[in-house]
Length: 129
Image (cartoon, rainbow, N blue to C red; front, top):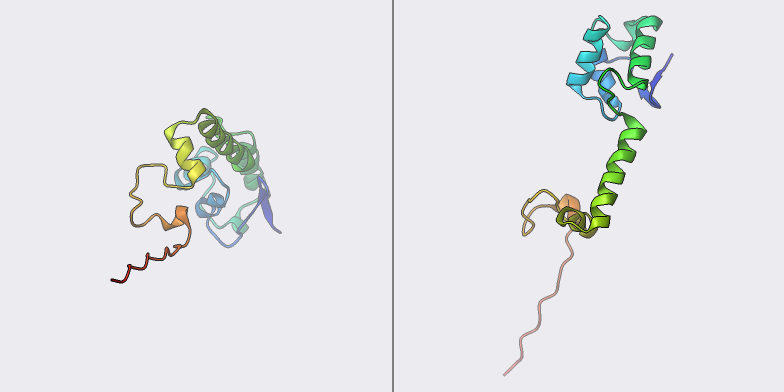
């Protein structure tokens, strides 16, 4: 029996607090607070009852008490925020367009994740005398 929440397969052999972090937008602290709110023990997912799993599923799908976003909704929100920055042409938007680090990191060395693999540039040959 596989458990699916927000379109994600939840691993059955992990403890509930860790397993819920598979869902985009839920970290350790939010997973812990969800379990505490519903008095669900931090057992492995396969050991939880169907009722406990349904409590978790309905709480996450309706966004909880503080209306947090998860999975597709959160990805769409992040994408639209970045698109807005690009459209208004601010510094951060331009950095996104150019594919460079956005948060002030150095670019002379490092930042290979954003820039991609190195591209070798050939040196000019010196003129002979």
